[in-house]
Length: 217
Image (cartoon, rainbow, N blue to C red; front, side, top):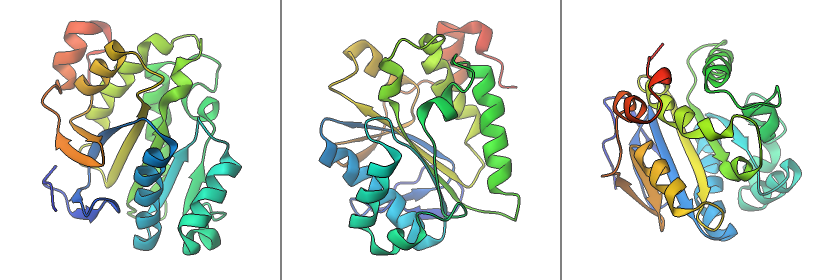
């Protein structure tokens, strides 16, 4: 089933028989390790088949655990997972708060640098998956996580990029999940992709919740 998510070229998500278009920001809501892996690993396995660059940030598991599970699911990935031009695995601290403090402005700069590096040898499709349970830790600045999520909707459109933010429903309160829904235009729940009726465009969400971050630049 194809879901039109932008005017960019379409691609296979790798699970549920779904395809959509590049330039997409999704949240995946899950309750079990099996459900998480069915989405995340299938998405990345398909990306490896398609020759995309995969970026993964495990938080509930180790980088080694991710590699083992990926290799068990996808024999071709076992060969390619150590190649940085196919897979890049980051710890949450290295990706989200390398200074020890989470900052939406620093994330803007970090994402620009990551994307520019991915395109350094020519146009390349990029698949990004982040397990977000790290945000339940007492990290300075983590209260601005939804600012970052909202501002991702300035960053992603128009790029050959698909990002899935993985939220464990057993670890986040309902109030946090509502803000997750308000900052992601598409949702994966129970293996089903839907256009999110709760989504608010970034200038609207930011203006109402964090006006000092509302500027797109």
